Structure formats: structure tokens, C-alpha cells
Length: 187
Length: 430
Image (tube, each protein chain N blue to C red):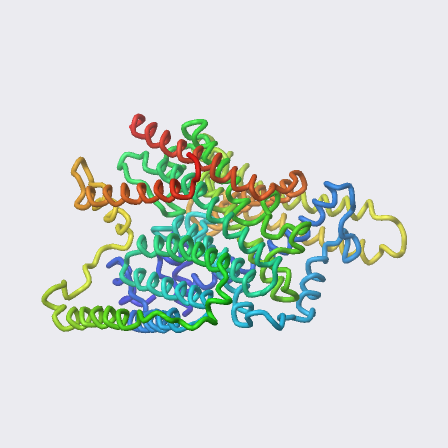
């Protein structure tokens, strides 16, 4: 190990070929994202969506947010996409993939996509003034603790997002109860 | 390269923490080889043990007591014709076994065979393991769909429903163990696999005995859920051979089929490692805090050598008991050679154990320690692997609605209440 590397180890983290990883992951995310909407076969779309989610998870890891990476892997790629596939297999996609679409939703979709694109361009042009221009460097090991501190608070102090977090969890609980009640004929 | 190789020797960090890519690669290679060999050994052991449970002999022809059977199987599978059904979705059919295999092997990066005997000590170790192993089921689901055939599709649907329902109970049981890691002076827990074992060492108790019986209940829930997660009997609904031919891999043959088997067994070892790490003290030998005298250290470091001596003795008994017919001569020579190899390994371990007992931190002592860590970890995992076989031989397969009922109406409430009670007790203790 050379001295430069040693000092880097002492500094806490060593980015390995960062630009390359970014371009590979970002390219993969965009390419598979395009595949999601262009494939006629629903299962192929779902698989492409999994690749998108995984490459975004990789980008989280590159930003030294391992907790978000793991949750993305666990919840989205593992859990939700499994349910997607489950539903796609239960309903008959064979016929619907051959049917011609008769609704005219694509202008709305195009408008929404253009608006989103405009937002991205705006963020790209004006972004320097709006966001911190460099990555906040935190030791990788503290990421989980940081998130916990923000959500639940630390040392007797309420966290920055405790209230919003609890409201969100309550909302999810209501949604779960609603789903159960709607599927039950008799309670 | 040589300096990178040498600088890590004697280090007490994982290659990941020491930022040593070369040794990380070496570890990956060792683990991959070790797991593949373990899967082959498991294959032999499962056939033998199942046969003996049913008062049969099991494989006896290929090598003495069928010891070479896994190698013969592997060659057979590689030479078999690789069929892709005409109506199958070619690409997805091709990629499905790879997904399962990748997910099964990726988790080995964080499994701690010892405090420095892991590829990397991730800060999110246990989350990473659960997340990646939950990707493994995608391979099964996609394989079932791509086969474009009825039985595989039903197998895949069963498998995904089963995974989703058992993952919840499994996750809650894991969380209750993670809560226990935070019961230290600092009050912060950890998700790192190495950190979890060290927390058990600091608290001088395996989490299975912590807050008795809370730890035990959480462990039992995990032990049940992990059988469902790996699609093993009695929860092997996805490949129930009496109803679905072979479930999701009905249409697979040859090498592709063997990849599924490899992934299944690798995943079994992986989930057993999670259970060992979270509840059974990981790499720690029995009573590392109470029996600390050097004499105890020596006694426990003799265990690996004794194990191999025992295996050699069993092989020698096999040689002696072999019928005195000329037909068995080659088999007898082979088994005697196997016994000699086992005995030689035992001698080597004995020399290391005796040579490395001095308290100063020389290389032999560190080597001896490392062998001890890996030995105890592998021993604990091996117990689980034997239990997998034992379950399969003992219990009849569950019906699918029973499986779902147990998952949602029994395991989930119990694991949720264990989690809540653990949290309350943890706060009270503090």
C-alpha cells in the first residue's frame, strides 16, 4: 500500500474510480428506464424496472448513503417488485399486450415528461445557487446513526423530522387497514 | 502487489476495512471455493443422511460409501443436454439461474467467519444480507414465468407469495436481535455483522439466551422463517414434486438446473450464517468470557484437530469393516487414503494449536486464533445444515393454505409482540 493510499485510509474513505461507476450506473439506470416504457411484455418491463432500481441503489451507495442503498434493495427491488411480478403473472398480460390502445393519454404523458425535463434543466442550470456545490463528507459508518438522529431525535431532543415521520407511518397504517377492510366481505 | 500482499498479514482488520483489494479478492476466492465444496459435501451428506433416516444405504457405488458421488453428479450435469423449450422466453430463461446464484453468493461478502475473517465489515451488514437474499426469489419467480409452462408458473407464484409472507416475520425477529445490541454504555446499536457478534461478547451472552425466553422465541421464528425463505421441506411448496413435478425448475436441465441447486444450497448456508451471527455468538467459542485461562484456550483450540481425528477414525472404521472381497480392494485403498489425508490435516491443526498457544501475538498465534474462529463458526452453521436435512426427513409437507396461515396468523403476531416486549424490557433494564 503506498503512502498516499495510507493517508486516504486515515481520512476515512477512498472513492474507487468514482466517475466510471457513476457513468456506468447512470447509463444503466437510463437505458433500463427507457426499456421499462418501451417493452410490450409486462414482465420484461418489470425486470427492466428492477435493473433501474438496482442502479439507483448503486448511486446511493456512491453517495455514501449505505442505509438508503440497503433499504432500496430490501423494500423496492426485493419486496415491491416481487409483488409487481406476482400481480403481472396472475392477470393475463398475454392478451392485453396484443391489444391496440384506444385511449389518447400520450399527450398528457408527454406534457408531464416535458415539465419534469424542464425542472431538471432548471436544477442543472440554477442548481449551484440552490444546493451545496459539493458533497457533505461524512464518515460512511455514521450514515445509519445520522438518519436515526434525524427521524427519532437524540439525547432527549426531538428529531428534525420526527413529526413528519410519525405522520407518514400513521398514513401507511391507515392504508393497510383500508386494504384489509376492502378485501374482507365480513368483518 | 507483493507489499500489498504482505502488509495485510497479521492485520486485525477485514480486507475491506484495511482497503486491501488484493486480499479482498483472495478472501472472495477462498469463500467461493469453500462454499462450492461445502455444497458438494452437503449434497453427499443429504443423500446419505436421508437414506439412513429411511433405512436405506444411499449412494454406495461411486467411491467408498459414495464419497465421489457429488463429483460424478457434477460431471453428469455438465455433460447433459441443455434444453431451452421452444415456447420459453429465451433471454429471461437464460438469465434466471444467474439472478439466483448472484444473490446467493453476494451475501457472503459480509458473513463474519471471524473478527477479521470477512471480506468486508459493512456498516449495514445485516440489512445488506436480508436485502440481497430477498433478491434471490426473483430468480425463482422469473424462471417459473419464462418456462411458459403450467407447473413452473404455479411453483413461482407459490414461491413469491411464501417469500413475501415469511420475510415480514423474519425481519421483525432480526430487528428484535438488533435492538439487543444497543444495550451498552453508549446506547447505540449496530447493523454490522461483526459488530453484532462483538456486542454479544461485550454483554457476555448469546442473544438466544438474552431476556429469556424473548431471544429464544425470536430465534425460533427466524429458524422457521429461514426454512420457508430457502424453499426447503416442510415448506418446499415451490418445488413440491408430488404436485408440481419439480416446481419452478421443471423445464430446466443440465448445467442451468445445477446452478439452481447451487444457489439453493448457498442460500441455505447464508441464512444459517445469519442465524448463527445474530443469536448463537458467531465465531465465538463456548464461554469466551468465563473460561479465559490459557489452559482453556489450549483446550478449545484442540477442537479442530480433534474433529478431524474423529473423522479420520470414522474413515478407518470404514476401512476395517469393508468386506474382504477383491472387488473392494480399490475402494479400501481409496478410503484409507482419505483417512490418511484427514489424519494429516488433524496433525497439522494439532501442531498449529500447540505451537500457537504462546500469549505473545506472533503469527502462529494469530493463525491459531483465526482457525479457531472459522472452526466454531462453521461448526455452528454445520449444525443448521444437518437440521435442514433432519427437517426434510421428519416432517410432511405443509399444505399451501396452512403455510400462509402459519406465516400471517401465528408467526407475524408472535414476532411483533416479541419485538415490542424486547423494546420495553430493554428500556426498563437500562
